[in-house]
Length: 249
Image 1: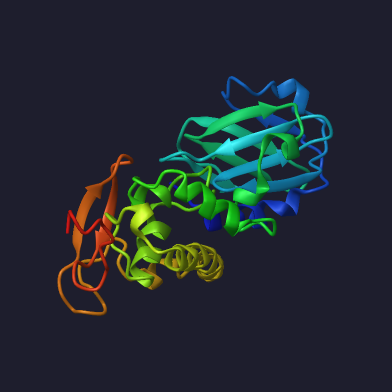
Image 2: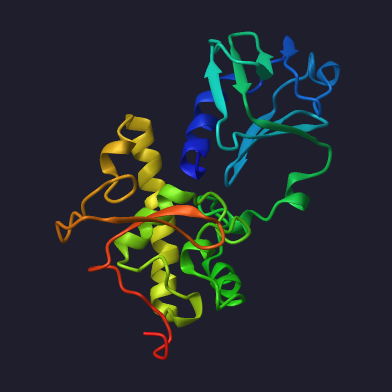
């Protein structure tokens, strides 16, 4: 599933069509009235976490690539088309994704302060929300899109490794200073990830995600599905500290 930096990269690629009219909308997205989009000018493209928004004068199209979504700019894929938008100078096509029509104001529907890559991101609010569920595992907390919109499984694994925090650590047992550093690391890593994506070199920078050996201790990494989300965790038992109650440890 694409994470926040990948969605911003997609936004940057698609911005070439901003200000242009939709000449021909196509696709089988049930929630998108194609006749309502035809002839409309694309006024802006925005993102919130893992969601992409194509803004028109009176409506907005929300696109989420889900687990297997794909897109093609000025080209087509051999897949069933969910939504295609042909503009004056090119086209963008989406496949295996969720497309929805929004008629209300995005500012009323979305809290930009939860988006780790938005200028309005509020780490104090994120910390408060994390502590509101103190018994949750940190690997689940970092994936909560109501707290850290845009953080996905890859970012989760890399940030926990950077801060040397074990994914099975209990949120309420992690010192506030360390939680704040984790939040700051999420933000910093996302912007680094975006730079790597622009360079086409993001995979080269993974330290533990989908890797086999700890780059610090040179021992095998563990890979397990942990937490309620059931997402894969890659971690080192030696250098990532497990924060749990003393009675358990």
